[in-house]
Image 1 (cartoon, rainbow, N blue to C red):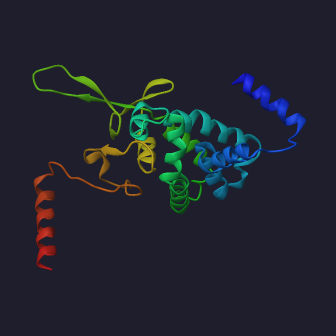
Image 2 (cartoon, rainbow, N blue to C red):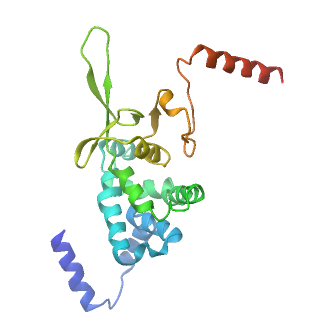
Image 3 (cartoon, rainbow, N blue to C red):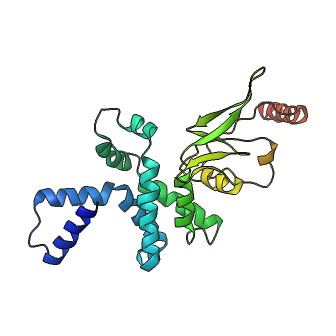
Length: 231
């Protein structure tokens, strides 16, 4: 990386006399499909100051140490390289096909509507989300000792731990709630009655499953179902 930066610095001093069609095509691909560029462009629409001073350094850190590390997972690679192409080629194709820029636009717009300070803190909040790599959950089995299970898609809302860049760490419930209310990991959240009062999990949630409801809640649910059926 150091050698590459030296080459870029030397080339920048000499200027560009001409641009070949191949270089232009490569530049166009990076502008449209590079995850870091897409991330920066989406943030710039809501916070133009992200390209100035220290804010630009935070944006670079978010892109290089946050988003790049987030995408650098074996299960992402397994999903995206279904045609056996190189993962480096699969990422920009997925960015365009899934319209990552539109997803980021929607996330930033919704966050801004819910909290006036969300866009100003968006770089720091996304950095926390991208740092949540894998989770661990304690599993209890009758007649045997408890053991931990790594979670690639799901996380418990209470007593959650993550294998972040700084090693295993306990997750604050508020950080986990913010991460779940984003289009990024975790994609499934399991909670007890701890998460039932005063917390919003609906921003990016598609399905809600109730399991082993208390008898009173189950009776109310059945009564409401009968009313809808009669209506």
